[in-house]
Amino acid sequence: MLRSVSRASPRPAAGLLILACGVGLAGPARAEPAPAPATAAASSSATSGTGAADGTPVAAAARARRQEAAVAVAAATVMAAPPPSFFNFSDTVVSYRFQGPSAEPGLRVQRPDGQFVGREVPKTVINLFHANAWAYGTNLLSLDILRSGSQDPAGNQVGRFEGVGATEFYLIYRGVLSLNKVFDTQALAIPGLVKDVGLSFGADVNTKDTTFDSEKRAGTFGLSFAFDVPAGFVNLKVQGYKEFSRNGFAGYGPVPGFDYAHFRSVEFKMTPEFEITYTIPLPFTGLPLSLAGFNTIVLPKGRYGRFNENDTQLEFVSQTNLVLDVGQLVAGTPNRVEVFAGFQYWHNKFGGDPRRTLNTEEKALIAGVAYHLK
Image 1 (cartoon, one colour):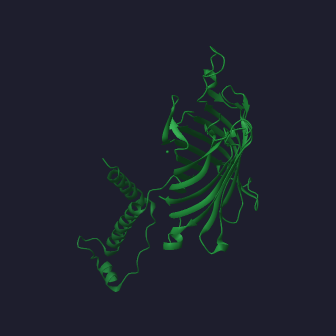
Image 2 (cartoon, rainbow, N blue to C red):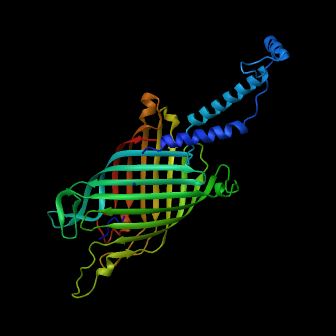
Image 3 (tube, one colour):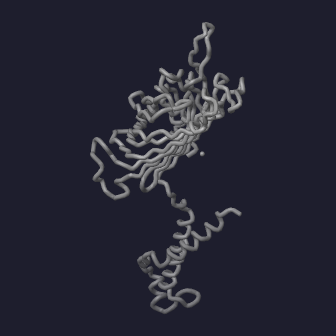
């Protein structure tokens, strides 16, 4: 059987520090303002040697007042300005979606005629998503909290908890270092084709409370290509993929006394992986609509099963969503509230061989809502 193996207040002190730095730098660094034209009264006072109440000549007193005003304005400006941010762009999104029917490899039900067939499972998913861009690249973090219907029961190695759906946590991180930005060049940009080439790296981590007791730990490393598109973005990652997982059914076998426990932890082979992610605006519709999604291909990564008796197959997963910016449509506040609907297709889920494992093909409808925290 194969399963998923497959985020006291500092403000007063900071304000005083900014103010102190602002005052200390504003005076010497500023250019002295040009003297104002002298009025008749000022000329008369200067000629007669009289000036301010303390005896300071008028021109000198005016210059001192201008200096004090410049320092005060500079300090106020420093205090009013927001603190510099490490990130050029940052967005955090909370979303809820329903998807189904989902497929879980190995999950089956017996029909009245005695034949076993795959069991379909509805799922509700809460997603926490964060993306940012900094001087030399980008980061993406996504956490799915998936709750299955009772068709996919929770449990442990002892047995199932019938009537209680399983819960899965799936965390993804993806980072890119832009080679153009790191080396301060445009040599890797091809106008009309590729905007940038970067080093990509990432990790996948999951856990799920079923009798299979899955745990997945995977890493990726390779190249990222940002295509030059008129609007939105289209990115391709060509990477190496290395996965470690756990087989919850290992430790049991037909030969008495044989130690099967070493099959529990599975180290898959390094294999190529391809990821395409995209967001494409659809302005011709007259609505704030866009297509957003991803496609991932993982080549065969080794063997799986109770005794590693099965070969993994090429795995392909695709998700495409039609996204409507409700905030922009209703209240003129873009990138705040969105609704979406789409479709997910998963071929040879988790690399399972359909000739050896039931329920490895998923065709699920998706509907949900997202809120940008900014």
